Image (tube, rainbow, N blue to C red):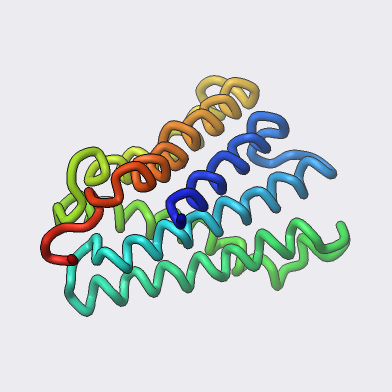
Length: 185
């Protein structure tokens, strides 16, 4: 069920990006922020599966890394909620800036987790490698704004969410046995 939450989160944010771009303006900005929050909740679903299956290993350091990622993602999620709901005069308040930094930090953390997941080899088949594709979102999308402009970049960003994150959730939902090794059963 959590894999479905991961897919729904990715598809929700992708839809907003297709319509409004990654920033949006006015109501569009609020929609992008709040659907970004839905995406972050989907990432929590993915983290839960990774914790439950000990996807990056059985060591204490692996468990701490996943919990630390959840904490940073939690702060990023609070920022998304506040930035999406606060009145215009408050949503760009200086006290929100440190929370805003947690968005890219959480994605950097997920990228590191995807590398460790692939190296650990506890997930099998496409599930072992698909997180690397999903976590390349920023590496693919951010440069595309510079290289091809915003209109094409929002298609790239939304499309990458569908191909990377949403598909990862579908793979987890269809083949949960590939995320559970004999070492975790």
